[in-house]
Length: 169
Length: 169
Image (cartoon, rainbow over all chains, first blue to last red; front, side, top):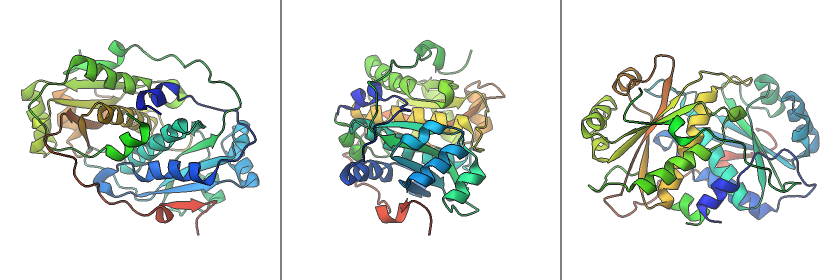
């Protein structure tokens, strides 16, 4: 699919068909995440792919979002370094967000729906997925075939409200 | 350009032609950033587009990366909320990384090169761009026509090293 079509087609999808994702489709999506750039190319990330229905239900509960259990796959993306960049920003957070953005766009290109999950109980979800103490789940995302036709796009701020030329004011 | 071609073509580009970026190309790239998803659709970001050569040189110096000044455009992406999500991760960092990933992939689709900049002096760069005290530059990226043919892709860890099925161990 054309890149700009992927960008304009992507929606947050919270209702899924009861339909498995073929292995080769899942592989291409994970491969897109693997191809993502990361600070100093360190790739300090782990993609935990959850398909077991009991564990998906538990993640949904720990996220206070029941609809999540419908998705045939939930991927938790874990940052494993804890490194802070010279600018004072967490490298893991940036790097894992890049990998998820690559994967969610790839999913759109495959006709799949996704939803980023940032509202979840970190401690509970780490326990459920046996994530080591010193690592952190940056975000999760759901993955599956959308049940409904694409919704209307959520409104965006106009470009001149979010772009400054040269500097503020 | 096909989505997967964009993903496989993208490189970190650190040498640029002395050639301006047409306004309509720059607009499409910024528009891709504007289309990016963000937590609760809050869009708490500001894209500061820097074209002035003296200011680019100053940003390059504050980033300890002289090559940056060659790029005809530097975009600083600023998080404006400071919000922390329920999972304990900074929302601004995730959201701005998503917007930059959208923009750097769009740039690749346009035949342009980019490089993510996470190594910079936050305080100096904020002063140079008059970024308000309570906001933060999450990352910057350079933008321009590459001087050289695409380099070989940096190696990536194999998929089975970065993917876990269901849980760790």
